[in-house]
Image: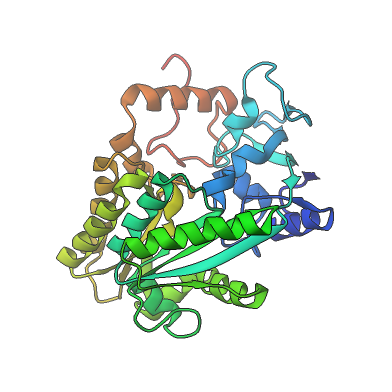
Length: 358
């Protein structure tokens, strides 16, 4: 499929399905976000656990360089290794290297069967342990989304979420054979129960499945019911460290007297730790809490961002993760594409991009 960058991601998904095909990347904002934004940030989503992120489905690009030159990268073939992987370089470059004007996407066969379960836990640490165990047992779900106690409080108990839930996992399996798909979900549910799940509720039909996912898609905004303001952190930790990460994020928030809601794509270690606060809270205390979460993720062997990019807000954190030589190399690349620094100046790197030979 060849699309312009302003097309909404949901439209891409719908068009693919009309042809019996499948565009797997599914950021939770798919109804409103654009495919160009997804490419610029290398967006992920719940299905990234099994299917990968945006970069894995971009075969080629048309882009305009700051000089005005138009370049075309990649091809419309599934395989192609001629020259450098400029497509891979531009995907996730946050608009700092070129302006993308056309995108060639790979589509795959659409799975015929999908099964969904809501696994209810007493707390998020137990849910995190279950994530690690499911993957260690060799099961590869389509999604494995985690919601902690704050997230459940924000979306509201009742409906699909039982009142006793202290955390939940939304798990999905898919494939072409209904028996095999349900068998995988059954195995996953059994593992969750062994790891302390209170219950495993299997969605009966599309209506129940949509009821579960509707709450997950609006979770980011729902958190404002708990506190009027928030800073949403997007970090990744090794999947085996998820339980420890969740516990540390909660402790960092508690020490600062702030709520930290942790949810996200636990199956691939991508956690969204949201610091919730009000107008009366000290901004310095809020920032210290954010920094503590980022440092904790790095100490656990993780990274400062999984899908939201660096932008302006995280530019000061980049040197915490990457050495001076690595950052210098990226600045040189920026200067090759954009010697005058006119594309998204200040993004990713805290200081202006260096020029070649500087």
